[in-house]
Length: 258
Length: 137
Ligand code: FES
Image 1 (cartoon, rainbow over the protein chains, first blue to last red):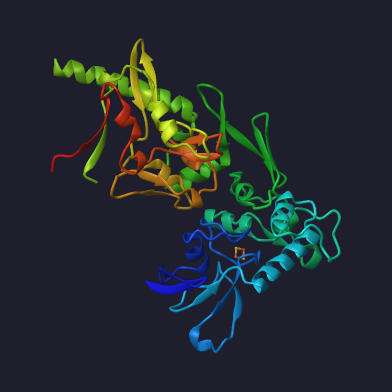
Image 2 (spheres, protein in one colour):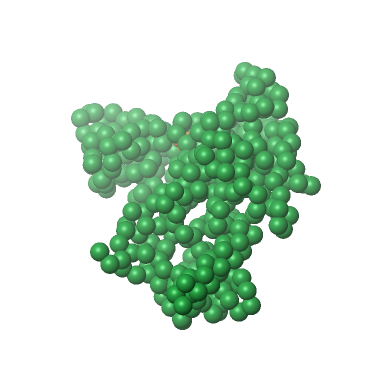
C-alpha cells in the first residue's frame, strides 16, 4: 500500500495501481473514453489528464494521463485545476472538429461548457476517435481480427488490408466496448453482419430463438473446452430443461426414500 | 465457504415470491432488475426454483475471456464484475443450465450473486423451499 494525495486528501492505493483507479475509488468523476477494465490502458483519448506533483519537486508540476500513470508514494494529484480543465476543453474541441456528428462527444463537450470548436471541422467526420478500444478487446479475445490500417488522414480501423477481417467471429465485443458507438452491426434473418462480413446465428433447437454466432460458439468450444452441445439451446429453454431434470431427480429421490 | 444455498423443489408451490424478492433487491435507478431465479413448472402443480448452481467447474467462468466472472470465496457465489463485462453474451450461451441472463431493461448481463451472502429469495420464501444454511463442519 502507498499513500497518495488526491485533491489534498490522503488515500491508500495498491502498489501496481494506476492513478485513475484510485481517483475513481474516491468517487471523483473525471471523463474518460478509452478506459475499460477488461483491457489494458493505453492513454489514447487523453481526457483523463490530471496534474501531478511531489513535495520535493520544488513546485514543478506535470500533466499526465491518469489511466497510464502508476501510483507512487507521496504523489500529489489534482483532478480539477484550471489548467487541467483547460486541457480537457482543448481536447474536446479537437474531438468536436474531428467527430462533429458524435452525440457522445457533443454531450461530453456540453458538460464542459463547449458548444463550438475553433478548429476546422471535418463535416462528414465519423464517430471513431481512434482510441483502439475495439482492437484491444479483440486482441484480449485472442482474435486479432481488426487493427488500424492506412496512415495519416486515411487511418481507419478495419480488417487487414482494409478488407473484411477473416479472423472475426462476430462476437460484438468491439461494438459494445466502443465509447462512441461507431461500430455498426445488424442482426436480421438469422444472420449477423459486422465489419463487412456475415455470420450465421445459432438457432435454439427447441424454440428457434437466435443466440450467438456459430463462429463464436466454435471459438469458445475450441479454446475454452466447452462442448458444442451447450450452445444448441437458448437460455430460456435450458432453464426449462433444468427444471425438468431436477423434477425427475426429486421424484426419483422420493421413490428411493420410500 | 461455510454456507450453502439449498433448494428443495418438493416444498416449492410456485408462488414466485422469490422472483419478486430477487427483482426488487436488484433494482437500479428505481427500476426492478431481472430476476435471477425462476420457479418453473415441470409437471402439473410441480415446480423447481431454477437458479445459478454456482458450479465448481463453471462454464460461465470458462467462457469469459475478460475474467469478469470470479468466485467470491466468502459466499461461494460466482460474481459478475460489470466493469469488466463487454456484453459478448458468451456466458449466457455457455451456461448449460441457462442461468446467466440478459437484463434488457438495464442492458446488462446478470447472474445470481447470492446477494453478497444474504439471499433475498431465501428470506422471503414462505415454504422454506429456498434456504441459506451453515454447513455442519
Ligand atoms: S482514459 Fe486515459 S487516456 Fe483515455
